Amino acid sequence: MSAVTDAKPPGHLRPARMEQVAGGSGTGRDTAGGAAVGAGEPGTAAGGAATGAGGAAATPRRAGAATGVGTAGAKPRGAHARVNPAAELGFSGDPGQHGDPGDGMLHAQRAWDATLATNRLDDLGVNVERQRVETRGVTATVGLLVDGWPADVRACVQSVIDHTGAKVLAFDLGNIDRAGDVLADFAERYPERITVWHVAEAPHWRGGTATWGESRTKLLRLDESDVHVLMETSVVLRGDALTPLVAAIVDGAVGAGWRGAEPSGGGAHEAGPGKVRALTGELMAVRRSAALGALPEDAHYGRNADLELSLGLRGELVVPPGPLPVERLGAHEVPAGYLDRESRRNYDGVLRMLSAS
Image (tube, rainbow, N blue to C red; front, side):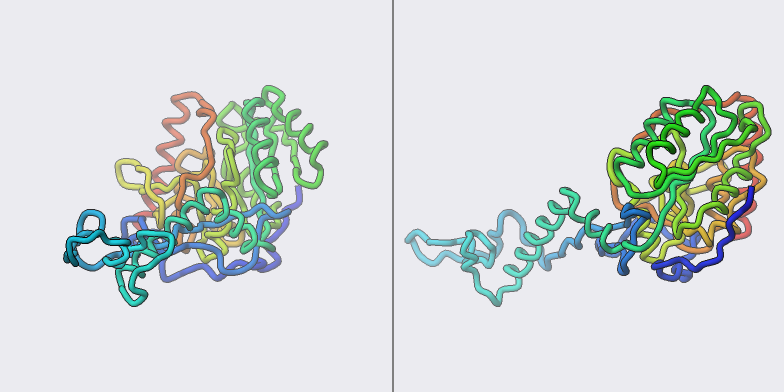
């Protein structure tokens, strides 16, 4: 099998933000007031799929300690009924907006109204559509390792086809339970979207010799896209979850994922949204050129090897504001004793990365 090298620079990706290297201090959450995080240059996944981290508009702060519905400091003007008491206080209390145009409280209310309108548009998917336009020209490929579970494979691949324009590059490891036949059928129906490599060896975690690190590295080298997406067949997309990830990378991150993690000596706990220390491999997009030297090629199994990959990436890792439309189908089990040994081995690598950072 020939390997494609990283011969060309990323098309429309901004330089990785090195001043905010993964592993730095911080909570992993955006505390800057909600500034939008998005892509600033054109780009999108192959065929138009691709994605970004579009933040919600900032919510303005009001000075003072007024409470209630705009009654603080109100002065009666007489016993007669007032036409528009809200306008007298500077609030947008009627469609005519009759408040004092120079009143700061009126401006704050209008900004608040605009924020709510923007959030409603984001909820309707306008934000993702904007990110698709902004990421036009950036290519993305979803890399899959298939080790059985044909029903899950069918649902996973179909969700990528239905909700994104990204290409799919898949390794069929041993055609376990005829899952490779499912991939072959997809490749026949979508030849421009799906490329499948059929490997005779079964995966190491199912009694064969094909390892996670070796297989993932080959997928990475066969890919020619700007953004490589590590995805497990145990998750499906319920919408375009790739566009926010790709847009975050276009904006300068080296990696973006569905779930963040904070590794520690005793394990790892979930982190994000915002900047995180590591990402999980269930759904994780990376700059392909940066991942080539960071992926742990010697890892037999993916448990904790995704964390080791994250810590090897030099740059910012983020979880976009969500929730992203992703759903777990269920865990793909391996023999418990083997998992315990391999998980410990991979996690030792994570601890080494942490001590060196």
